Image (cartoon, rainbow, N blue to C red):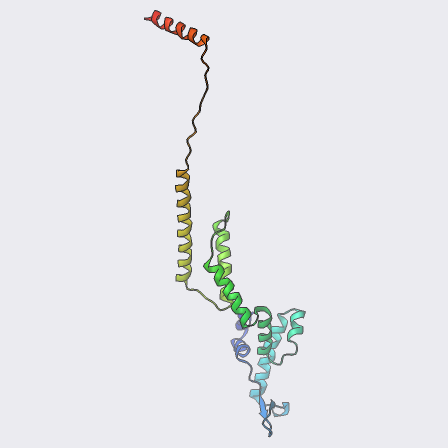
Length: 198
C-alpha cells in the first residue's frame, strides 16, 4: 500500500508517516484544541485537504472490518498506525517475528526431496518477510549463508559416500555338492576319454 500511495503523491506518504500537523490554537488556560473552521487560512485548508485525500485512499483500500477499526481516526497517520499495529503487531510482536525469521534464516537448510526452485522460493520468502519488518541483510551476508549451506551439503554427501564405501559388502555364491560313487565313476570315465584322445 505504501508504494501505491507514494506513486499517487509522495507528499501524501510524508503526511501519513510524519502526521498532518493539523492546525491548532492554544486557549487562554493553556489547552491546545483544533482550530475552528472560521479561522482557517489557505495553508490550513490545504493541510486538511491533503489529510482528507490520504484518508480517502486508505479507506478505499481496506475492507469493512478494517474500516470499523479506523473510522474514528482524525488523521491519516492515526489510521496508518492503527492498521500497522493490527497487521504487524506492536514493537514487541514485531521483534518476536523478526527473531523467529532470523532463526529460520540462520538455520536454513534444504529439505529432503526438495528441489532448488522450491528451496530458493522458501529462502526468498524468509528474506522478504524480514525486509517487510525492516530487517535487511546485505548480499554478502546472503551469499555467505548460501555458501555455508552448500558446503555443509557437500560435506554431508562426501560423508555418505565414504560410509557407503566402508560398508561395501561382497556376496559370494556358494553351492553344495555331495560326494557319491556316481561322481567317482564319472571321473574315471572322463579320465579314460582324455587318455584315449592322446
